[in-house]
Length: 182
Image (cartoon, rainbow, N blue to C red):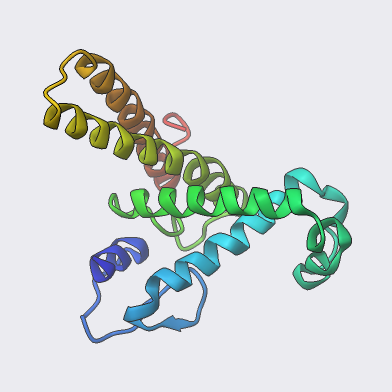
């Protein structure tokens, strides 16, 4: 899964022997691709939280932001990081299946990056998790031979899938710079 995951994220096929690369320039060993993704999602969560919750810290470097008492000793900040990281990570992995786990283009604008990570990945991650819960619930109900919740589970699954599919189309429109579809 890791090799195919990265092929789609970078947009170019890779040989099995080549190191995998995250959005940054440093190569990542195949065994630790998930650690690199976790580190990336943690950093992106920090950027998002600073932007929306502590805009007074935006002018500081990332290290200075982390040393601030608004961040370092703030349990609310760390609780939000714990919630944001799996959302962004799951969203990135879902979009990697559609070849959208990385920048929309080589010349991706900062606003496009923000939209991709903070708006789309951060919301599609929870939708994907909700889809997994719906499937698990359907399997559980099927095993117990309960049939009264089938329609609600199908509707829930379809709503989640439609939202994600809409964002796949949105990212594709951004990649093509198609203003009519965005």
